[in-house]
Length: 381
Ligand SMILES: Cc1cc2nc3c(=O)[nH]c(=O)nc-3n(C[C@H](O)[C@H](O)[C@H](O)COP(=O)(O)OP(=O)(O)OC[C@H]3O[C@@H](n4cnc5c(N)ncnc54)[C@H](O)[C@@H]3O)c2cc1C
Image 1 (cartoon, helix red, strand yellow):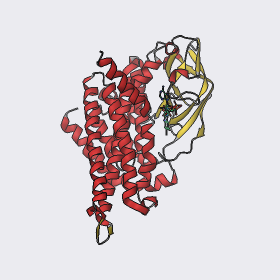
Image 2: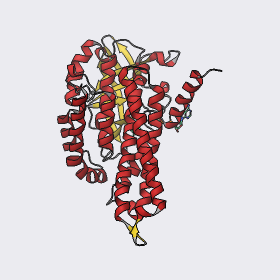
Image 3: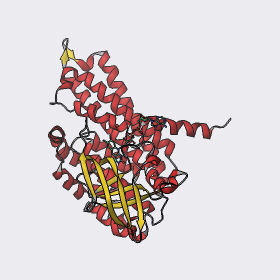
Image 4: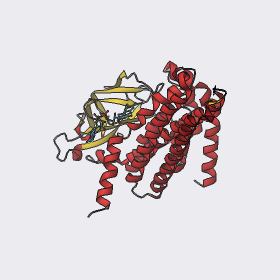
C-alpha cells in the first residue's frame, strides 16, 4: 500500500474512534458486555483483515501503519484491539506458514471477519514455558484427535476458530520438536468451558477452552508438517510485541490527553493545577514517555516491514511502551485526585487495562532477558 492510502486508513479509523468508539467505551466496559455493534463496524472497516494480504481480501497494512491504528484505538479504549489482533495473529500464522491450499481456504474468510478467533497457546500449567504444554493431538489416518485444556484465550467465547498449539509427539526431545499448530473450529468435542472474570480488559472474552476427543482433519495442520508449531507460535511474537507496545503507548497517550485537559480545568489555590510545578513535572514525564514509546514502536515496525529480524527492537518497544502505559495511567490517577476513583471518568479504566500489556506476548521479565541476551551475544569480549 502507498503512504497516501495508509494515511487515509489511519484518518478514517481516527474518525471512527472519535465518533463511534469513544461514546460507548465506558458503558460496555462497566457492563463487561461484548460490543456486538462495534465488532460489526470493525468488520466493515476491514480491521479483521488489516494485516492480511490484499490478494486474500485483506488491507495488507504495514506493521508501522497497523501500530499507528492500534495506538489511536487504544488511546480511547484498549479492549477492542484484542478482538481483531488475536484474530490477526492466527491469520498471520496461516499467511506465513500455511500451505497454499490453507491460505486460499482460510484467509479470505478471516479477512472478512466471517470466521473470527485467536490463538490457543497458554495452558493452566504453561504460559511462559510453552514447551511444557500438555494438550496432545494423536494422528488417526486422515485426522487428529485432540485432548487438553487451554486457558486465558482471547475471543474464546465469541470466536469460533483458533490456531491451537499441541503436542503431536509428547516424548520428543528437545520438546519443541514434538509441537504443532492446528486450526480448530468449535464443535464436536471442542468448546469454551469457562469465561474468566478480570480486573480490566473487560467486554472482550477471555476463556478456558476444552478439547475432549475433538476430531479435526489433518488438512488443518498448519504448514502440513508436524514439529514446526513452536517456531510458528513464537514466530508471530515480533509482530505481536509491536502490537502490545502500541496498545501500551495508546493507553499512555490517552492518560496524558485526559490529564492535560483536567489539569487545565481543575483549580486549587486560585489557579489551574496545571500551573503548579508538581503537576507540570508529571505532565512533562508523561509526554516524554509517549513520544519515546512511539519512536521505539516506529523503529521496530519499520525494521519488521523490511523483513529483517527485529526481536531486540520489538522487545525494547514492548517493554518500554507497556511500562509507559502503567506509569502514565497511575500519574493520571494522581492528577485527577479523588475523581480518578470515580467511574465517571476514563482514567480508572486506563489504570485497570494497562498492566495486561506487561504480561501479554511475553512478560516484561522475559523481554529484559531477550534484550540482555542479544546485548551479550552482539558484544563478545
Ligand atoms: C487477559 C489475558 C489475555 C490472554 N490472551 C491469551 C491468548 O489469547 N492466547 C494465549 O495463548 N494466551 C493468552 N494469555 C496468556 C498469557 O500469554 C500468559 O499469561 C503469559 O504468557 C504469562 O504466562 P503465565 O501467566 O502462565 O505466567 P508464568 O509463566 O507462570 O510466569 C509467572 C512469573 O514468572 C516469571 N517467569 C517465568 N519464567 C521465567 C524465567 N525463565 N525467568 C524469569 N522470570 C520468569 C514471569 O515473567 C512472571 O512474572 C492471556 C493472558 C491474559 C491475562
